[in-house]
Length: 474
Image (cartoon, rainbow, N blue to C red; front, side, top):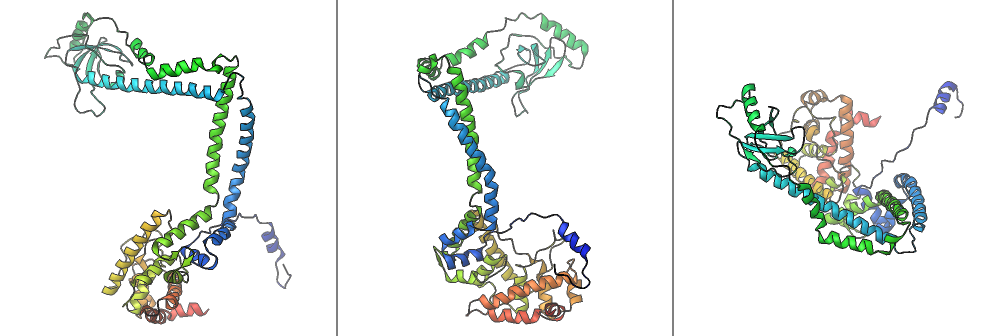
């Protein structure tokens, strides 16, 4: 810093010693920028320029650590591949056979579980009052007599109410029956049975203990036999036993190397996909922007169309919507005040949610223009969604009444008081300056045969007065 009279060295020391703040690029390809880049450089060269941008540099820098890890993983994979060699035969092939057997066994197990669950639900639906059953699993396992089948009113299947041998009344669920339940006998339940009466429960439980029931069946053995009878599983096991590696004394050591190799391969593939998703991020967005502009007729390959040239001269966040409004003649025939109100919907952004619906001028032409603008915005949002973009925001009519009133000659106090918005004079001036900027652009880019140019000039003159004109002269 060059010394000058009144300079405070302490303040300079404070600036020099303050901590640094990281730079984060907020750059993204816009519609206006895409049209101008393609018009000057062509799509291929424009894409190359974007790949050299600071935003792309930051995105690529985040990939460096991932790429380093991929290189380490690939080196480890090469080392593990050396341990896959076996004089007897192909270890990976043998490992695939083992994996196929495990997958088939798991599939048969799932099929068995689903089949047993279906059988259990069907058997529960057939129970009647007085059936004696054996609850095979859970805390309520043992003999029980059915008091209520519980068939209706439960989405997960029947839920019977039973009395157990220890005199407890319980409502069971399909979870308590992993296999089908079979009635083991019948017991008469008196019509006067009261589940809340200890004496009734004792009498019925005593009768339950006297019922002669057969021993448990060997269902588990039949379940195991289902896998043993599967032809595909038997064929895979024969191929495994016949494989040359099956007789290798180091077979299990080889298979452990195969497992580590497969796991590391999966991790490396995930890292590679993350790199591919991050690399050329800016250029990929540019490609989608160009494709969307081709769909709308603003680009034709490397050629910028007439409406594309118009878009290239509109500098605002809502550039594409402004171009579409001019292209479709949405603002034709409006008065200067109505045009100012319509254009304000493309620059104004409220702070949070508006408490009430915004006041709207009674001009019928303005209402039609705002409706047409909303339809265009909806169509453009559909195009954006189809190309993975989200640049444009819906028009915001909250400032339309203020812009219309000010352009109609009302005083600042009247506009702020009657607007219904929580606007300060500073807020008013700030939005008016943005409105003036966009109106000035419209006077230059609107088609020569359009009445919008002259209307925009008149709107500028109507808006640029009083405190607004004063703020712009400072």
